[in-house]
Length: 285
Image 1 (cartoon, helix red, strand yellow):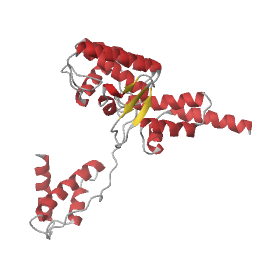
Image 2 (image 1 turned 135 degrees about the vertical axis):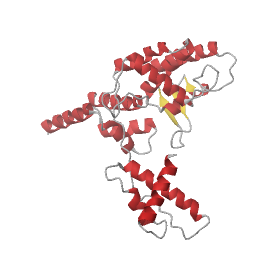
Image 3 (image 1 turned 180 degrees about the vertical axis):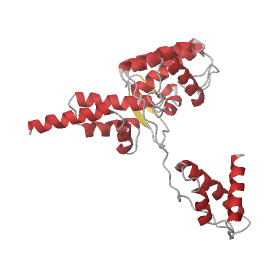
Image 4 (image 1 turned 60 degrees about the vertical axis):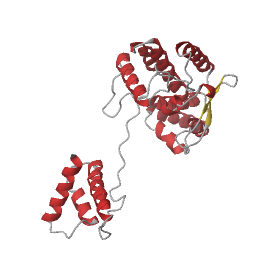
């Protein structure tokens, strides 16, 4: 095992350096030995020693346990893959590659909902039949990432699509007592791993490819794409960008608009739109 191998290397290091025992200093020194390794690997090496030291400290209080945060590391974020409207249409059509009509319609409807609302995948999977309010044209999103609930307004076409899916669902699974909106073939709530696998097949079938090593078409990027498209629409209508950002942040369920801003930072179109608006303002002044 890799962990066992690393522990043996650390012990060899202690013996070679004639150290008295495990210490924060030796743990740090050993963790930083690979000069060209990235932060994640050094962090992992230190965590192996920390776990070992914590185990030894149970029987020997004199063992020094390296504290957390000594090698802070922020993993690089993937570059959002911003889907065009035609790519989203192609993705939904690519659901036809899946094995049966229920899977095809379920995944096409799910992808359409994510693209139209910017919901998190987990939020969509957790939707129940009763969360659709057709008269008010909204969804109730419960128990979100930060433990809050919110209401998500729907375009009339999205309401129509969901109602059609509910009718199909009743026909496919007439005896299912599962409250979930989106059902598997077994009549149970969808699993994220299965949704992800089906989405990867749809991406391949739609002919979508990576734009770079860090920019792969992911299902979560439908959320990014919704956010960017909403901001571009606001700029095109001459709206207040800051006000729109606050609205979108609330709509997405973010606790801090700064999280929403990161979604926008990878979109050159938004930077250009903001620059044009600033130029127009300066010309009027």
